[in-house]
Every structure is written in C-alpha cells, then in structure tokens.
Image 1 (tube, rainbow, N blue to C red):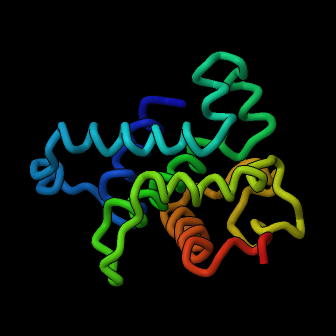
Image 2 (image 1 turned 60 degrees about the vertical axis):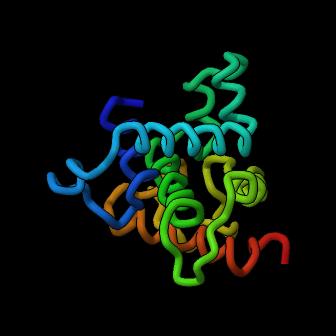
Length: 162
C-alpha cells in the first residue's frame, strides 16, 4: 500500500467513509485517539481475516494476497475501515455500538467471501466492482455504497447464511 492508501484508511477508521477531513476537523482530532482507533481497527482486521495475519507473520506475501483476495485491495480495506467506524466508533441512531470483539465476530462471517475475483452470482454481484472482479470501484460514492451493503449484512444477516 502507498502512504496515501494508509492515510485514507486511518482517516476512514476515524471519521467514516462519507465524511471528509476539513482543516477544522483535522485540528480537532486528537493524534492519540486517531492512532488508537487505527490500531484497534487493524487489530480487528488481523483477528478477523487469517490472510491479514499471514501477511503480518510473513507466511503470505502482499503480492500473493493481491492475487487471491479482495483484502489485497487498499480500497477494500478502506471500505472495512468505514464499516468499522459505523459499527464501533460512530454515534448510531439505535444508540448501540458494537465492541471490537463483536465487530471481529461479524467480519469473520465475511472471510469466505474475500476470494478474488468475485463470483458473478455471489453476494458481491450487485456491488460496484471493477470489471476484473479483483477490487471495488474507488470513488467516494462507490466506497459509501459498499460500506452500506456490508452494514446491511450486519443488521439483516449475511445473505449466504440465510
């Protein structure tokens, strides 16, 4: 990942996929809190997805991850940062937030759906993916749409378990 990708992921874990960081908001954010939320998100990803842990441990290369998993896409990781923000950090309408453990349990339900390229009739079939099926579209609107799809699964249940 590039430094810009990492910064985008950290920002998304802090403020969500739909919000931009203005100069005023940047001044209001506490560096320690931003770092804490980023570390919590990355720990959830590592605990949720064995492929992430394998890259960290050096048993899988980043290149191999990019060839076989949606998690090899920085955009997909940013989408998960947005989902994490909405589930764990954001003030929700229901007032209920998930714990990191609950977010991990939910993300674990998605492990088998991270295979790349996506299947034409799989759960991602209505999501905005590149024609290759290896990564989602990276526009702000498409990222928000992907976050919303995954959030819906967190509320209604994942479609492959129905």
